[in-house]
Length: 216
Image (cartoon, rainbow, N blue to C red):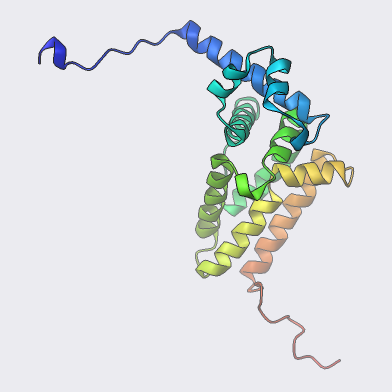
């Protein structure tokens, strides 16, 4: 192969990569701080840039739109949870029930970031790729744990599990009901185990009530 046929060499610079990561963190930190005191529709890209101490084009270079910002927050939060607490994604509903309590409790340790992710990712028209991926992983976990269910019943159960174990649920229970992560995690873990037992006992959405047909 001649020199002209060889693909161009790519150079990686640890310093440049470190600077890139630092800039991304500054932008995400600024977004987190703004969402702590403002509604989503009140936060502009210009405000994020000013808060982060970077130019507007720099923000767009790292995060092209709102969905990219959600993705950046979610990925960083996931990395923190794994690095600090070793909380990997559960493969089955049994694992999910065991880890739910720890997930909610330890989300309190990253409350500002988790709050920002929850409010920014609340619009169903703009779910991040990470959120869609987690929904798919939940469907797979349900299929592994409950292979005896029909596809539609698995779909119903996965949807309910996905809603229960989410930063949106953590935030709602924290802000509206005054429950810290320890308390809300215990409640959600209990709900998961109870629902799993009920489903395995044949109680499914739309099925007849155990009391159906009894005389009053």
